[in-house]
Length: 420
Image (cartoon, rainbow, N blue to C red):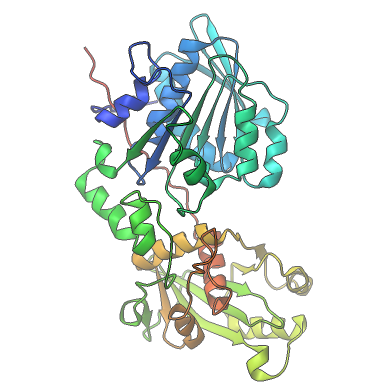
Protein backbone atom coordinates (compact mmCIF):
# COMPACT_ATOMS: atom_id res chain seq x y z
CA UNK A 1 0.00 0.00 0.00
CA UNK A 2 1.38 3.40 -0.97
CA UNK A 3 2.08 5.90 1.80
CA UNK A 4 -0.34 8.79 2.24
CA UNK A 5 1.14 12.06 0.98
CA UNK A 6 0.94 14.60 3.79
CA UNK A 7 0.85 18.39 3.79
CA UNK A 8 0.68 20.91 6.63
CA UNK A 9 -2.38 21.28 8.86
CA UNK A 10 -4.50 24.40 9.19
CA UNK A 11 -4.92 25.98 12.66
CA UNK A 12 -8.42 24.53 13.07
CA UNK A 13 -7.28 21.06 12.04
CA UNK A 14 -4.46 21.27 14.59
CA UNK A 15 -6.98 22.26 17.26
CA UNK A 16 -9.09 19.20 16.45
CA UNK A 17 -6.01 16.99 16.64
CA UNK A 18 -4.77 18.21 20.03
CA UNK A 19 -7.74 19.68 21.96
CA UNK A 20 -7.63 16.81 24.48
CA UNK A 21 -3.85 16.99 25.10
CA UNK A 22 -2.47 17.88 28.55
CA UNK A 23 -1.32 21.38 27.52
CA UNK A 24 -4.42 22.31 25.53
CA UNK A 25 -6.69 25.06 26.93
CA UNK A 26 -9.67 22.91 25.88
CA UNK A 27 -8.59 19.69 27.63
CA UNK A 28 -11.35 19.98 30.25
CA UNK A 29 -14.14 20.12 27.65
CA UNK A 30 -16.53 17.17 27.64
CA UNK A 31 -17.19 17.27 23.90
CA UNK A 32 -16.14 18.69 20.56
CA UNK A 33 -18.38 19.74 17.65
CA UNK A 34 -17.04 20.34 14.14
CA UNK A 35 -19.54 21.62 11.60
CA UNK A 36 -19.39 23.66 8.40
CA UNK A 37 -18.67 23.36 4.70
CA UNK A 38 -18.16 20.15 2.77
CA UNK A 39 -14.54 19.13 2.07
CA UNK A 40 -13.33 21.45 4.82
CA UNK A 41 -11.03 18.88 6.41
CA UNK A 42 -12.99 18.11 9.55
CA UNK A 43 -13.97 14.42 9.20
CA UNK A 44 -10.60 12.70 8.80
CA UNK A 45 -8.93 15.06 11.27
CA UNK A 46 -11.56 14.25 13.86
CA UNK A 47 -11.42 10.47 13.32
CA UNK A 48 -7.60 10.43 13.66
CA UNK A 49 -7.80 12.55 16.80
CA UNK A 50 -10.51 10.29 18.25
CA UNK A 51 -8.29 7.22 17.91
CA UNK A 52 -5.21 8.98 19.32
CA UNK A 53 -7.21 10.33 22.28
CA UNK A 54 -8.64 6.88 23.03
CA UNK A 55 -5.11 5.41 23.32
CA UNK A 56 -3.84 8.39 25.31
CA UNK A 57 -6.66 8.02 27.84
CA UNK A 58 -7.67 4.34 27.90
CA UNK A 59 -6.69 0.74 27.25
CA UNK A 60 -8.89 -2.35 26.93
CA UNK A 61 -11.91 -0.07 26.58
CA UNK A 62 -14.88 0.08 24.22
CA UNK A 63 -15.78 2.99 21.94
CA UNK A 64 -18.44 3.62 19.31
CA UNK A 65 -18.02 5.19 15.88
CA UNK A 66 -21.41 6.06 14.41
CA UNK A 67 -22.61 7.17 10.98
CA UNK A 68 -25.99 7.38 9.34
CA UNK A 69 -25.41 3.90 7.89
CA UNK A 70 -22.62 1.35 8.22
CA UNK A 71 -21.96 1.75 4.47
CA UNK A 72 -21.53 5.53 4.68
CA UNK A 73 -19.47 5.17 7.86
CA UNK A 74 -17.03 2.77 6.20
CA UNK A 75 -16.81 5.00 3.11
CA UNK A 76 -16.41 8.35 4.89
CA UNK A 77 -14.48 7.40 8.02
CA UNK A 78 -13.07 3.87 8.16
CA UNK A 79 -11.63 3.50 4.64
CA UNK A 80 -9.65 6.80 4.71
CA UNK A 81 -8.56 6.15 8.31
CA UNK A 82 -7.09 2.64 8.02
CA UNK A 83 -3.98 3.40 5.90
CA UNK A 84 -3.13 6.38 8.10
CA UNK A 85 -3.35 4.27 11.25
CA UNK A 86 -1.10 1.71 9.61
CA UNK A 87 1.51 4.38 8.85
CA UNK A 88 1.31 5.51 12.47
CA UNK A 89 2.17 2.02 13.67
CA UNK A 90 -1.29 0.86 14.73
CA UNK A 91 -2.54 -2.65 14.01
CA UNK A 92 -6.20 -3.01 13.02
CA UNK A 93 -8.13 -6.28 13.07
CA UNK A 94 -11.58 -6.00 11.54
CA UNK A 95 -14.48 -8.29 12.37
CA UNK A 96 -16.86 -7.10 9.67
CA UNK A 97 -19.64 -9.51 10.61
CA UNK A 98 -19.69 -7.93 14.09
CA UNK A 99 -18.96 -4.37 12.85
CA UNK A 100 -16.00 -4.31 15.20
CA UNK A 101 -12.43 -3.02 14.86
CA UNK A 102 -9.81 -4.03 17.42
CA UNK A 103 -6.99 -1.48 17.22
CA UNK A 104 -3.65 -2.04 18.94
CA UNK A 105 -0.39 -0.19 19.42
CA UNK A 106 2.37 -1.51 21.66
CA UNK A 107 0.81 -2.98 24.78
CA UNK A 108 -2.45 -1.04 24.40
CA UNK A 109 -5.57 -2.25 22.63
CA UNK A 110 -9.10 -0.85 22.33
CA UNK A 111 -12.36 -1.98 20.74
CA UNK A 112 -14.27 0.24 18.30
CA UNK A 113 -17.84 -0.75 17.43
CA UNK A 114 -19.45 0.62 14.26
CA UNK A 115 -23.12 1.67 14.32
CA UNK A 116 -25.56 3.08 11.80
CA UNK A 117 -28.12 5.58 13.12
CA UNK A 118 -30.52 5.39 10.20
CA UNK A 119 -33.86 5.77 12.02
CA UNK A 120 -35.60 5.72 15.40
CA UNK A 121 -35.26 1.93 15.71
CA UNK A 122 -31.45 2.23 15.60
CA UNK A 123 -31.35 3.36 19.24
CA UNK A 124 -31.91 -0.23 20.36
CA UNK A 125 -28.68 -1.36 18.64
CA UNK A 126 -26.43 0.57 21.00
CA UNK A 127 -28.54 0.16 24.13
CA UNK A 128 -26.89 -1.62 27.05
CA UNK A 129 -23.27 -0.95 26.12
CA UNK A 130 -20.70 0.77 28.34
CA UNK A 131 -18.49 3.13 26.35
CA UNK A 132 -15.49 5.34 27.03
CA UNK A 133 -16.29 7.66 24.13
CA UNK A 134 -18.35 8.04 20.98
CA UNK A 135 -17.70 9.65 17.59
CA UNK A 136 -20.85 10.63 15.70
CA UNK A 137 -20.15 11.38 12.02
CA UNK A 138 -22.98 13.10 10.12
CA UNK A 139 -24.76 13.57 13.46
CA UNK A 140 -27.34 15.96 11.95
CA UNK A 141 -28.61 13.09 9.77
CA UNK A 142 -29.26 10.81 12.76
CA UNK A 143 -32.46 10.66 14.84
CA UNK A 144 -32.25 12.33 18.22
CA UNK A 145 -33.18 9.09 20.04
CA UNK A 146 -30.14 7.29 18.61
CA UNK A 147 -27.74 10.12 19.44
CA UNK A 148 -29.00 10.46 22.99
CA UNK A 149 -28.83 6.71 23.55
CA UNK A 150 -25.22 6.69 22.32
CA UNK A 151 -24.30 9.55 24.67
CA UNK A 152 -25.99 7.80 27.58
CA UNK A 153 -23.69 4.80 27.05
CA UNK A 154 -20.60 6.92 27.82
CA UNK A 155 -20.56 6.36 31.58
CA UNK A 156 -16.82 5.74 32.02
CA UNK A 157 -14.93 8.49 33.88
CA UNK A 158 -13.03 10.64 31.37
CA UNK A 159 -15.30 9.75 28.44
CA UNK A 160 -15.91 12.41 25.79
CA UNK A 161 -18.34 13.07 22.91
CA UNK A 162 -17.19 13.83 19.35
CA UNK A 163 -19.67 15.34 16.87
CA UNK A 164 -19.17 16.06 13.17
CA UNK A 165 -21.73 17.31 10.64
CA UNK A 166 -22.65 19.55 7.73
CA UNK A 167 -25.34 22.17 8.47
CA UNK A 168 -29.04 21.45 8.08
CA UNK A 169 -32.13 23.52 8.97
CA UNK A 170 -31.83 26.11 11.77
CA UNK A 171 -34.84 24.34 13.33
CA UNK A 172 -32.79 21.12 13.66
CA UNK A 173 -32.66 19.73 17.20
CA UNK A 174 -28.86 19.31 17.16
CA UNK A 175 -28.30 22.94 16.19
CA UNK A 176 -30.61 24.17 18.96
CA UNK A 177 -29.63 21.70 21.69
CA UNK A 178 -25.88 21.43 21.12
CA UNK A 179 -24.41 24.11 18.86
CA UNK A 180 -26.38 27.02 20.35
CA UNK A 181 -25.76 25.63 23.85
CA UNK A 182 -22.15 24.54 23.37
CA UNK A 183 -20.85 26.74 26.19
CA UNK A 184 -23.28 25.51 28.81
CA UNK A 185 -22.62 21.90 27.74
CA UNK A 186 -18.85 22.45 28.17
CA UNK A 187 -18.32 21.73 24.50
CA UNK A 188 -15.61 22.99 22.14
CA UNK A 189 -17.32 24.24 18.96
CA UNK A 190 -15.30 24.70 15.75
CA UNK A 191 -16.86 25.99 12.53
CA UNK A 192 -15.05 24.92 9.33
CA UNK A 193 -14.86 26.44 5.84
CA UNK A 194 -13.22 24.98 2.75
CA UNK A 195 -10.34 27.39 3.35
CA UNK A 196 -9.56 25.44 6.55
CA UNK A 197 -8.46 22.48 4.42
CA UNK A 198 -5.01 23.31 2.96
CA UNK A 199 -5.04 20.13 0.87
CA UNK A 200 -7.97 21.40 -1.22
CA UNK A 201 -6.82 23.11 -4.41
CA UNK A 202 -8.52 26.22 -5.75
CA UNK A 203 -9.84 24.31 -8.78
CA UNK A 204 -11.42 21.65 -6.55
CA UNK A 205 -12.93 24.35 -4.33
CA UNK A 206 -14.41 26.00 -7.42
CA UNK A 207 -15.84 22.67 -8.55
CA UNK A 208 -17.62 22.09 -5.24
CA UNK A 209 -18.89 25.66 -5.20
CA UNK A 210 -20.44 25.13 -8.63
CA UNK A 211 -22.40 22.06 -7.48
CA UNK A 212 -24.77 23.93 -5.18
CA UNK A 213 -27.15 26.87 -5.28
CA UNK A 214 -29.55 28.65 -2.93
CA UNK A 215 -29.77 27.28 0.60
CA UNK A 216 -27.58 24.29 -0.25
CA UNK A 217 -24.81 26.67 -1.35
CA UNK A 218 -25.10 28.54 1.93
CA UNK A 219 -24.97 25.27 3.86
CA UNK A 220 -22.36 23.22 2.06
CA UNK A 221 -20.08 25.99 0.80
CA UNK A 222 -20.56 28.77 3.37
CA UNK A 223 -21.31 26.36 6.22
CA UNK A 224 -24.47 28.14 7.45
CA UNK A 225 -27.49 26.61 9.19
CA UNK A 226 -30.16 28.14 6.94
CA UNK A 227 -33.71 27.19 5.98
CA UNK A 228 -34.61 26.10 2.47
CA UNK A 229 -37.33 28.08 0.73
CA UNK A 230 -38.77 28.80 -2.70
CA UNK A 231 -38.27 26.49 -5.65
CA UNK A 232 -36.51 23.19 -5.01
CA UNK A 233 -34.54 23.54 -8.26
CA UNK A 234 -34.30 27.32 -8.77
CA UNK A 235 -31.45 26.99 -11.26
CA UNK A 236 -33.42 24.77 -13.69
CA UNK A 237 -33.31 26.45 -17.09
CA UNK A 238 -35.19 25.11 -20.11
CA UNK A 239 -32.53 26.50 -22.46
CA UNK A 240 -29.81 24.57 -20.60
CA UNK A 241 -31.51 21.47 -19.23
CA UNK A 242 -33.88 20.49 -22.04
CA UNK A 243 -33.37 19.54 -25.67
CA UNK A 244 -35.35 18.40 -28.71
CA UNK A 245 -32.19 16.89 -30.21
CA UNK A 246 -32.33 13.51 -28.49
CA UNK A 247 -29.70 10.85 -29.19
CA UNK A 248 -30.37 7.49 -30.80
CA UNK A 249 -28.62 4.25 -30.00
CA UNK A 250 -28.07 4.85 -26.29
CA UNK A 251 -25.81 2.39 -24.48
CA UNK A 252 -28.21 1.83 -21.56
CA UNK A 253 -31.87 2.37 -20.78
CA UNK A 254 -33.86 2.61 -17.52
CA UNK A 255 -37.44 3.47 -16.65
CA UNK A 256 -38.31 5.26 -13.40
CA UNK A 257 -41.81 5.25 -11.96
CA UNK A 258 -43.73 7.26 -9.39
CA UNK A 259 -46.93 5.27 -8.93
CA UNK A 260 -50.30 6.84 -8.21
CA UNK A 261 -53.98 5.95 -8.40
CA UNK A 262 -55.78 8.97 -6.96
CA UNK A 263 -52.59 11.05 -7.27
CA UNK A 264 -50.83 11.34 -10.65
CA UNK A 265 -48.48 8.64 -11.89
CA UNK A 266 -45.28 9.55 -13.73
CA UNK A 267 -42.95 7.24 -15.71
CA UNK A 268 -39.75 8.29 -17.48
CA UNK A 269 -37.62 6.47 -20.07
CA UNK A 270 -33.89 7.26 -19.65
CA UNK A 271 -31.07 6.65 -22.09
CA UNK A 272 -27.31 7.00 -21.58
CA UNK A 273 -25.33 8.63 -24.38
CA UNK A 274 -21.76 9.92 -24.16
CA UNK A 275 -21.84 10.14 -20.36
CA UNK A 276 -25.18 12.01 -20.20
CA UNK A 277 -28.57 10.58 -19.20
CA UNK A 278 -31.47 11.82 -21.33
CA UNK A 279 -35.12 11.63 -20.33
CA UNK A 280 -36.27 10.49 -23.75
CA UNK A 281 -40.00 10.08 -23.18
CA UNK A 282 -42.51 10.15 -20.36
CA UNK A 283 -45.93 8.86 -19.43
CA UNK A 284 -48.00 10.99 -17.04
CA UNK A 285 -51.54 10.24 -15.88
CA UNK A 286 -53.53 12.55 -13.60
CA UNK A 287 -56.72 10.67 -12.71
CA UNK A 288 -58.41 13.79 -11.31
CA UNK A 289 -57.76 15.80 -14.46
CA UNK A 290 -58.68 12.97 -16.84
CA UNK A 291 -61.65 11.70 -14.84
CA UNK A 292 -60.68 8.03 -14.50
CA UNK A 293 -58.27 5.86 -12.54
CA UNK A 294 -56.02 3.21 -14.08
CA UNK A 295 -55.35 -0.32 -12.84
CA UNK A 296 -51.93 -1.90 -12.31
CA UNK A 297 -52.43 -3.88 -15.52
CA UNK A 298 -53.22 -0.72 -17.49
CA UNK A 299 -50.17 1.02 -16.04
CA UNK A 300 -48.06 -1.98 -17.03
CA UNK A 301 -49.31 -1.72 -20.61
CA UNK A 302 -48.24 1.94 -20.66
CA UNK A 303 -44.87 0.88 -19.30
CA UNK A 304 -44.42 -1.54 -22.20
CA UNK A 305 -45.37 1.20 -24.69
CA UNK A 306 -42.86 3.56 -23.10
CA UNK A 307 -40.05 1.00 -23.38
CA UNK A 308 -40.88 0.21 -27.01
CA UNK A 309 -38.16 -1.96 -28.54
CA UNK A 310 -35.48 -0.70 -26.10
CA UNK A 311 -33.62 -3.19 -23.91
CA UNK A 312 -34.39 -1.73 -20.49
CA UNK A 313 -31.88 -2.60 -17.76
CA UNK A 314 -34.46 -2.24 -14.99
CA UNK A 315 -37.62 -0.46 -13.94
CA UNK A 316 -37.09 1.62 -10.78
CA UNK A 317 -40.34 1.94 -8.85
CA UNK A 318 -41.67 3.92 -5.91
CA UNK A 319 -40.93 1.50 -3.01
CA UNK A 320 -44.46 1.89 -1.61
CA UNK A 321 -46.03 0.58 -4.85
CA UNK A 322 -45.90 -3.11 -3.87
CA UNK A 323 -48.83 -4.24 -6.04
CA UNK A 324 -47.45 -2.54 -9.16
CA UNK A 325 -43.99 -4.03 -8.62
CA UNK A 326 -45.56 -7.47 -8.24
CA UNK A 327 -47.54 -6.94 -11.45
CA UNK A 328 -44.31 -6.11 -13.36
CA UNK A 329 -42.50 -9.13 -11.89
CA UNK A 330 -45.29 -11.54 -12.86
CA UNK A 331 -45.11 -10.46 -16.48
CA UNK A 332 -41.40 -11.38 -16.51
CA UNK A 333 -40.35 -8.78 -19.08
CA UNK A 334 -38.55 -6.26 -16.84
CA UNK A 335 -36.29 -6.44 -13.81
CA UNK A 336 -37.74 -4.37 -10.94
CA UNK A 337 -35.73 -2.33 -8.42
CA UNK A 338 -37.42 -0.62 -5.44
CA UNK A 339 -36.23 3.00 -5.46
CA UNK A 340 -34.07 4.60 -2.79
CA UNK A 341 -36.38 7.11 -1.21
CA UNK A 342 -34.45 9.51 1.01
CA UNK A 343 -35.99 12.79 -0.15
CA UNK A 344 -33.35 15.32 0.92
CA UNK A 345 -30.42 13.17 -0.22
CA UNK A 346 -32.16 12.47 -3.52
CA UNK A 347 -32.84 16.16 -4.17
CA UNK A 348 -29.18 17.00 -3.53
CA UNK A 349 -28.10 14.31 -5.99
CA UNK A 350 -30.54 15.50 -8.66
CA UNK A 351 -29.28 19.06 -8.14
CA UNK A 352 -25.68 17.95 -8.63
CA UNK A 353 -26.48 16.02 -11.83
CA UNK A 354 -28.44 18.93 -13.26
CA UNK A 355 -25.70 21.44 -12.49
CA UNK A 356 -23.13 19.07 -14.03
CA UNK A 357 -25.37 18.69 -17.11
CA UNK A 358 -25.38 14.92 -16.53
CA UNK A 359 -29.16 14.68 -16.93
CA UNK A 360 -31.04 16.37 -19.77
CA UNK A 361 -34.82 16.45 -20.24
CA UNK A 362 -36.39 15.85 -23.64
CA UNK A 363 -38.49 18.85 -24.64
CA UNK A 364 -41.49 16.57 -25.24
CA UNK A 365 -41.59 15.78 -21.48
CA UNK A 366 -43.94 18.66 -20.82
CA UNK A 367 -45.22 17.50 -17.43
CA UNK A 368 -41.67 17.16 -16.11
CA UNK A 369 -40.77 20.65 -17.31
CA UNK A 370 -43.99 22.05 -15.79
CA UNK A 371 -43.25 20.45 -12.39
CA UNK A 372 -39.70 21.84 -12.32
CA UNK A 373 -41.21 25.33 -12.42
CA UNK A 374 -43.69 24.61 -9.59
CA UNK A 375 -41.95 22.21 -7.17
CA UNK A 376 -41.38 24.18 -3.94
CA UNK A 377 -40.13 23.71 -0.39
CA UNK A 378 -42.59 23.56 2.50
CA UNK A 379 -41.42 26.52 4.59
CA UNK A 380 -43.55 25.40 7.56
CA UNK A 381 -41.82 22.05 7.92
CA UNK A 382 -39.22 21.45 10.63
CA UNK A 383 -37.25 19.27 8.22
CA UNK A 384 -36.20 19.88 4.60
CA UNK A 385 -39.45 18.76 3.01
CA UNK A 386 -40.95 19.78 -0.35
CA UNK A 387 -44.66 20.48 -0.59
CA UNK A 388 -46.68 17.43 -1.60
CA UNK A 389 -47.78 18.92 -4.89
CA UNK A 390 -46.34 19.03 -8.40
CA UNK A 391 -43.94 16.32 -7.26
CA UNK A 392 -44.70 13.21 -9.32
CA UNK A 393 -42.23 13.58 -12.18
CA UNK A 394 -39.89 15.12 -9.59
CA UNK A 395 -40.15 11.94 -7.52
CA UNK A 396 -39.56 9.58 -10.43
CA UNK A 397 -36.48 11.59 -11.46
CA UNK A 398 -35.22 11.50 -7.86
CA UNK A 399 -35.75 7.71 -7.75
CA UNK A 400 -33.75 7.32 -10.96
CA UNK A 401 -30.81 9.46 -9.88
CA UNK A 402 -30.60 8.14 -6.31
CA UNK A 403 -30.96 4.49 -7.35
CA UNK A 404 -29.36 4.08 -10.79
CA UNK A 405 -26.76 6.84 -10.79
CA UNK A 406 -25.48 6.74 -7.21
CA UNK A 407 -21.74 6.34 -7.22
CA UNK A 408 -19.31 5.95 -4.33
CA UNK A 409 -17.22 9.03 -3.80
CA UNK A 410 -13.81 7.56 -3.02
CA UNK A 411 -12.04 10.90 -2.83
CA UNK A 412 -10.79 12.31 0.47
CA UNK A 413 -8.39 15.01 1.45
CA UNK A 414 -4.82 14.17 2.48
CA UNK A 415 -3.68 15.35 5.88
CA UNK A 416 -0.09 16.21 6.48
CA UNK A 417 2.60 16.48 9.06
CA UNK A 418 6.11 17.65 8.56
CA UNK A 419 8.61 14.89 9.24
CA UNK A 420 11.89 15.72 10.98
